[in-house]
Length: 468
Image (cartoon, rainbow, N blue to C red; front, side, top):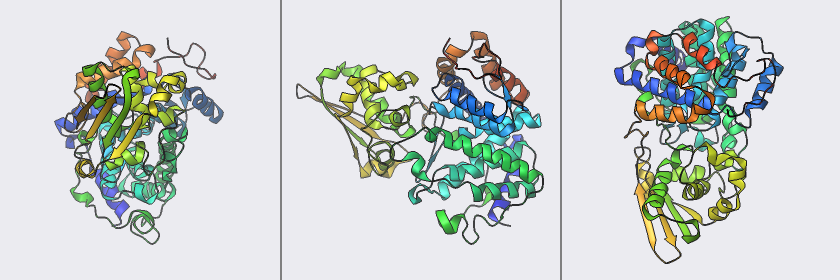
């Protein structure tokens, strides 16, 4: 069998009964976390533009949009996934040579699940499958160093999860994966240099394509099954040789993903934790700061610290800010938090943070690099104008693999993000539905999502969703 046929065999064999108690609990926490991120993004600057886009495609469809309205399956997958991703506050998977955000798959799987009339157990299984396929390919076939984006592995994972919940047989699913794997190989330029809106929309766009590819394969359309190991396939053209035995794979990757405590790129979490601890302990005032030196592992340095992917001291937009370690350290020192409010345009451009950014220097450390991804060590040293140097080293945070986020902490994050768009009763209903997902249907969850932050005007008109 070809590699994609082996993946398809793994996916079709997967069942809800294979999920361990730990995996079930962690899936629920990630659904709660992802829904919090999506609802909390409803007043984002791009959201009216995305609703315009969906409107141009045509509102009539079989799948529900978060906040009301409906659309065809691929448009709903794109829009809902874009909401999950917009804040850049959802989960991450840390492999040595790749980082991805497996909850990016939720929007497309929800749309496909609504189309199929699927159960909550079906949703959990499809999500577990998508996480497993994407994460294991990130482990064994990283593509970042070769100039490609993590959506490359995502195309396999998203298609696997969508195909699973739509009930494709093994051959149909193999063809769907082959189509996606051939067509959807995006460049890493998405996340290098001057960052654009596309940083948050690349995965939703890819997952919408995967919905179409699965529906094509369900109609009998075939794809190049040797896309992984064949001539000019993935191994030959992008990743190099790798080995994965899908017959021996389980469904164990969900608990190995990390949740974000702070609204910032995943590799910044320990640096922000150290910065905030120093601020609290020493009551540091911005005018007292002479210099801030941050020591991190190589991946953090290259992605958000000014290394391989470009200087991070010039910050003008949200997309640039949440991927700039100098900005994140500066705003944490000034505001005592890093949450969605720290990405308001007037906050980013204010003189205080723009000035303090220039005092922050980022340095890679080979010893720290050797410990990644098992740990993400970071040291923050602040030189004060009176000559004192205060420093703190942090290696973990609540939400990391070594210190998992509890349901109560995840709910507190969910509540903070969704409070402007929901009532107490709605939040309670969300939590109850997700906590008992095995006994509920996707329709139960989708119905609740359609009512959050609902615009006062009709759903087929273009609206701007503001905080209530």
